[in-house]
Structure formats: C-alpha cells, structure tokens
Image 1 (spheres, one colour):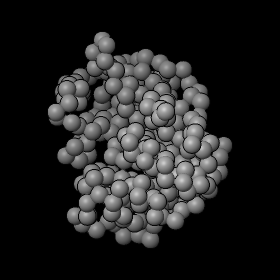
Image 2 (tube, helix red, strand yellow; image 1 turned 45 degrees about the vertical axis):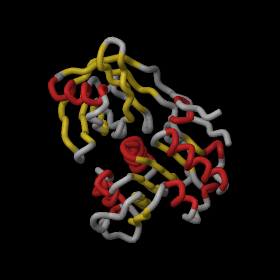
Image 3 (cartoon, one colour; image 1 turned 60 degrees about the vertical axis):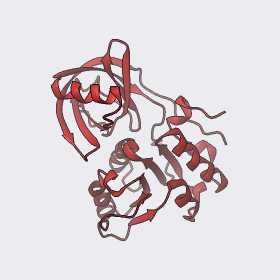
Image 4 (cartoon, helix red, strand yellow; image 1 turned 90 degrees about the horizontal axis):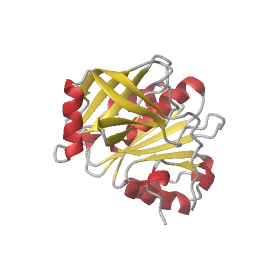
Length: 254
C-alpha cells in the first residue's frame, strides 16, 4: 500500500524564540510554550519544528497547538532520563530564556479541502500532532466528524486524557477512543462518545468494525506502530491516497 503526504506549503525558517513556560503534564511528559514573531512562528496543523541543542544537533517535535496568529507554540515532550538528548533538552529549557528553532517542517498536514471524517490514530506524545489538527478543524470545519484513537502502554501515559474527554463531551462530532495495553487504573470520564479498549492499537482497530474507506486517516507514533496500523487499514479497505503520516517520509518502508 502506498500512502501519500500533503505538500508542505511554507518555507522552513530559522529564528530565535522565547521560552515562556515549562510544566509537567505527567511524570514522563512535559509541556513547553514558546513565543516569537507571529509571522515567523506560522505553521499548518500537523507540522513540526526542530529545536537546536547545539551547533550540530536539531531535535524534531510535533507542534501541539493550532495556528492562532499570536506567535505562540505549544510542545509536548517525552522525558527519557536515560537518553542524553532528552536530559540535555530538559536542562536547556529550564535555564534558557531563548532558543533557536526552525519551522515549519512536515507534509502530514490536515487537508482543509476535504470533508471526509477524520480518523486520528496516535501513540504517546503523538497526541500532540493530533491536538493541533483537532484545534484547527474545530475552528475551520466545525461540523467535520473526528474520531480520536489514542494509544498508550499505561493509563497514566494518557497525559491529556481530560482534554480529549472534554472534546468528546462538548462536541457531538468528536469521539475519544482510549487504548491501553494494561487495564485502566480508574474509569474514564463519562460520555457516550468516550470509550476504552485494552490491547495493542493495531489489533483493537482490526476488531473495531470501522469502514476505513470512509475516512481521511492520520497516524502519529513510532514507525513500528504506524506500519502495524497501516497493515490493518490496508486489509480493511483504507484508501491509500487518504492515509497520512510523517513516518512515511522519514522512515519509508521498502
């Protein structure tokens, strides 16, 4: 199955921005708020940026906020203490007033010309890319149906569960499907469009009974997770031209 990506529409820029907030979203994920010149920080929903750690090291992160024209960008960053770049980045963000970044990058951008329902499948901090897509779609296409499937190993890894549940409770066109490999530690918020599934996300999708051919599908996670889901989507009738992921560009499968 071939899967196409949407063409990037903006030229990548290098700029300096301010770090205005660093906050823990969970024991393993922290949020960062950056501010810069509005025109320089402009991006499309689904794109990512790269932060400069040193002269030769740039680290990519999905932009977790839709474009609002105010020069503010939100990131969700997984903290891996055993990984050198992760520890260096956390230390840098805590002490730096300014950072150098380049953006926007990525062609996995929501297609605002399409009216097909959105199926958003994310693992871990892949939720950040989907958050930007959902915020932009609520603003630009408020009637467009959205089905968010967010996979994690444990319940606590659904670090923005309350936000995802709020969307499903507030907007009748949005559903939230939480997928965890281990049982929940406590129930999800109540709501007819909020559901929990236990297992691996590709296997859960295989049993879902969804008509994948009806959707524009966006995937965000590790290459292994994305391609496992892609195999299921292919077998269940997804349209190749309507499946999108950054993984197809940076980790193409032979």
